[in-house]
Image (tube, rainbow, N blue to C red; front, top):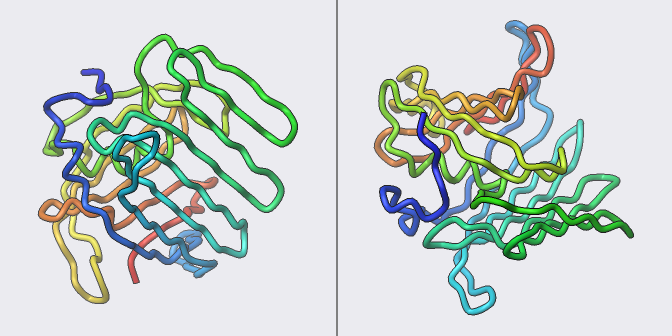
Length: 215
């Protein structure tokens, strides 16, 4: 399995489509589905330290938890610059400073040494939309995970081609892609034609799933 690095020349990083997206958050237990909130994604192009960047803001409003996550990455390479995530009770800020990462949580600071190029964990959902997905495709990359406060390996594999909802009754062909965050598995459906993230599914426990999908 190949290792994907920021700036890999085979990936068209600068073509990422900037747009606003909204999904409903659903808890599903067997065949019982309950809407518990919504999530929005807004990707804009800005300038940070004289470099063109993509700023991704994702907001989750739900009965379970409210989260705001902001990532700033290079438009041309997806190299990370900064990440901030805020929940009901905590705020973490991650700054990528060349040879190390500075993690700020409340009044405490922590430095983590970087030995190789890596991605920001929150940008993985952007990375997979640019990959040359097809039957049998797989790759892996390394990211800094703010929640786990460490660098982890993320494995990405296409597992099927399926039709999923785009908007309302409209269904489109998509690549069902499994992403393994060192034991935490999430499934993403990426539309084949437009490379949109249409659906995400996380297993909570047993038959209970957390689903993000278009209305």
